[in-house]
Length: 275
Image (tube, rainbow, N blue to C red; front, side):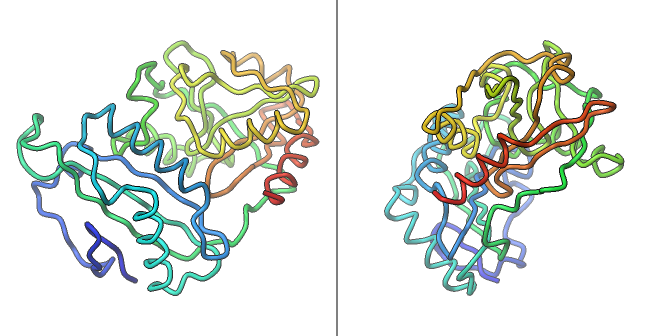
């Protein structure tokens, strides 16, 4: 498989980085994971907007490689080169150029892009999942918590705990002991046909699919509220589901002794596949 470093093709499996790489040393990097359906990147403009906004927060310099038209051509060329004509996923990463210790010598970036084959749709789990809380470490309430960065130890530990758990997912808690998000997804609850999701200020990653589902819901007569959600709310709601760019919508049927319906998530999943 081929990958792209600064618009040059390289072998994806070949080692490229030295020990001075800042993504390796300090997690001084950002990334986007982009779904591919029918050989086309989904929500590319939204992913690029989030990436550029995050680069600004980290004071990284903009690159001409990241203009929408130019990036789209690069991605389509890579998909064609890797014979990804149906489903797949793209990882687009930017990291500050080598040099310096904590203080970088430059704010210029490298752009790394890789692509692999994947499902050609958003798979909905009609049987439902179970979940538990991840309370070993809390997600901080600060601006950095809203960035999709390579500094992802919290997600690593939560995902590791999930893999050793009998449950399908773990829900992260923030410093205020409120519901935040899942290990790689945004969280939604439904009560009395109203959709609730944590505020971005609750330490939530502003997910691309989260934004799309909120818009889909509003445009189809479903009321949406972005709020602070307590752990106790899990016992009061009718439905729980998560969203991310690769899996779309995932429905959860069980939390401890509580059981949930999936009326809203099924409706939103149908709408998602129409768009």
